[in-house]
Length: 549
Ligand SMILES: Nc1ncnc2c1ncn2[C@@H]1O[C@H](COP(=O)(O)OP(=O)(O)OP(=O)(O)O)[C@@H](O)[C@H]1O
Image 1 (cartoon, rainbow, N blue to C red):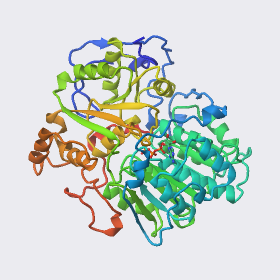
Image 2 (cartoon, rainbow, N blue to C red):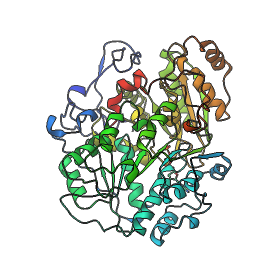
Image 3 (cartoon, helix red, strand yellow):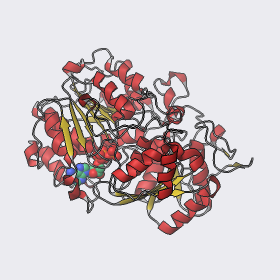
Image 4 (cartoon, rainbow, N blue to C red):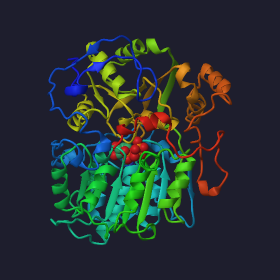
């Protein structure tokens, strides 16, 4: 049962070369020697040779590569699957104790209950069927702000309900204004566009939108790379009120004239800091500059994330009305306090055995293991399978069909271990992920915060273990100490020492300035110890951009 489900891509990348150095991050890959492993797991389908066709950066137009034929399975139709959800955890009520900072002129009053949200009957029913009894803080504050027509930059910890915070008021407004029931037309004019950085995340948001819109005339549609364009277009043309998309495919569909923007009222950037960093900023500027896109004065722009570096906040203002509201639940860039964080000092060559030991001790707990490169994702997944630990993997070099299969095997528990690159770091909401392992620490603290946030969601408790290699991870030490102490976690003495001695010498950390507790417009209130940097992602992030949509 240890088979690696989904297997590797066949063709040129079908084999894994355990070659040491890694071109993506400059870090050394795991293991040495010249052996070539080709692992085909049990039940693995051998997919067609598409070579690099599904590289995200080639997906803006499929005229340039082999045709992508994959059509995803249809979303569930039965009510029980649409509304399936997991229980809130023992710490759900503690969300109410988190400090909230709302800034901007005349912010509307927060609501305390969903009844006060003024939702129409069908939405109210759908909220109840989703198992929501009371709103989380980002919903209590975010819903009235959006309903009042204000632009919003919202920051709240991972797993605290940001998705419903924007979906519910948008749906409510569309229902209240009697949005035209979607019907076939050669050009669709959606009222809302939602963008997110990865295919799996945007699909998840779409399923949430579909759930809350259940039984209404509002039709959400999702578009993302790696699936057949013709299929995508047909889905859009059937009718589209809320268009969810990753940037490349979204711009492609708009560019093909299939989507008009004259009725657009809402533009939502989920994982907004990621959507505005160097990797995606040009696409976002292209999107808001698309013909027919209402100006920022004439649309409502909403941004959500758990992290907002200061420079990104400043740039985000270009997309928002001057009087946007800034909402911070807790510390901006802070880790979820329901995740118990442990940092273990290791050396590169003992990591693999330590991982094995860890996974053996946790039994069948659902665990996400994050690695820095696609190559090590393949390698570690293969290794774990050989050790009879049922494992699958997700990263940007896998075909979409394989990515979706991997995620579904992990969600159902068929493969309790998912080895992932940064592509799975943000937003994914998977039931019963008890454990996150940072086999490789990321180079940015924001990425760390998002990764460990795959567990400890919605008041549930989770654990995160990170392997720290002093030779390569020292630049992260200071930010780690801050994140740990900010989340009331024990800080190992050795880490404090490394952080302290690193300060002023190896102090460059492109994402070290995330400890903002307030709105940039307040000026000078940032608790930053490091000089401001331009809004460039760290070299590793830039190099790994193809991981993203
Ligand atoms: N008011 C609520 N009551 C119960 N469950 C809720 C409530 N709001 C959201 N949830 C559930 O909590 C989980 C996490 O929500 P969501 O994915 O929106 O978090 P998030 O803040 O967007 O996280 P991330 O920063 O990782 O993207 C989901 O399963 C969602 O259905």
